[in-house]
Image (cartoon, rainbow, N blue to C red; front, side, top):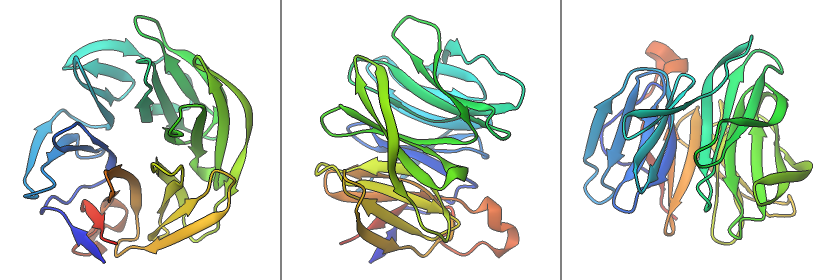
Length: 255
């Protein structure tokens, strides 16, 4: 069963993450940061201006990406070096050591994945990307999963002290749809939202398809676990006037 949480409908909902009290997520094209109470469905919304692609709770306040800027509690702390063909920041994550990992999107092979160590400038760690997406760690922190959406696959890297190695393909994701945001559950399953595919798929750490969940929206964008609750963001903008009642909603997969 799939249920909508609250009545917010985003143009492009993205980046769900638990802050310890409520679910943080963004509307990329709407330029909004949402904070949703999962018990009541009530959402507090802050307008920050588009495009805002990523939010993450930190001890110093919310970290968010807007355009190429990274802001911590509203204060700019870094700017990614925009190159020809790069359009903006996209998905990101903060690891246990406080490193920020954030990708960009742009024209074919113009985008990058960057790492920002605490107090340091952005350093590119992956080049030749198009839409850097779905950046999440394994439960033990030794693997980084990453999606370059147009390739249709999920890649995995070994990671130690912030250094990536041994890039390989975890899974070639079958259509319809393309891999977008991901979540990794406590058992290590990698859950992938299928943009324009209307579903989530889950893979074991060995790349075996373990589950598939059909959704009542065509453009799921990302997902997150809060305990054993599986939350999904979605987009309405690609559908225009044809958007259905749940497109753009925050959803829960009740299992």
